[in-house]
Image (tube, rainbow, N blue to C red; front, side):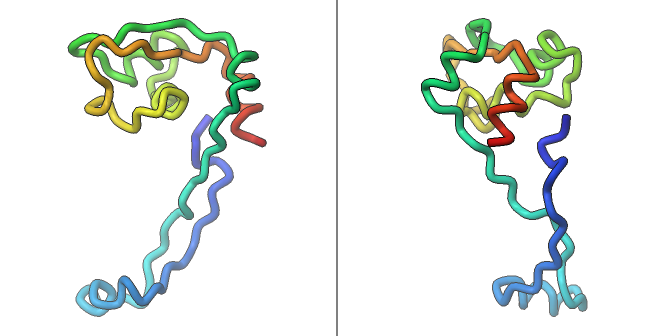
Length: 111
């Protein structure tokens, strides 16, 4: 399950990029549209079963994703659900909630 599954590809010709486009002698940049993820409400969070993981030195999202989901590429679910975009943002000792049901997470994301 990629977080980019339904993402549109756009041909970006914004004026902001004009100097870079000219420098590279290209007309536009083909890129993926920014993904806007739905943040679960309190009611939705109550319905999602989770395990608590206390963050410690050397923890990595991809390791937790592999442990809980069997797929290290799903690391972003843990980051998104807890509101820590990168591992550097997670303080040692923080209690992370690991959503256990991928089906429930998919339902929340598709709202």
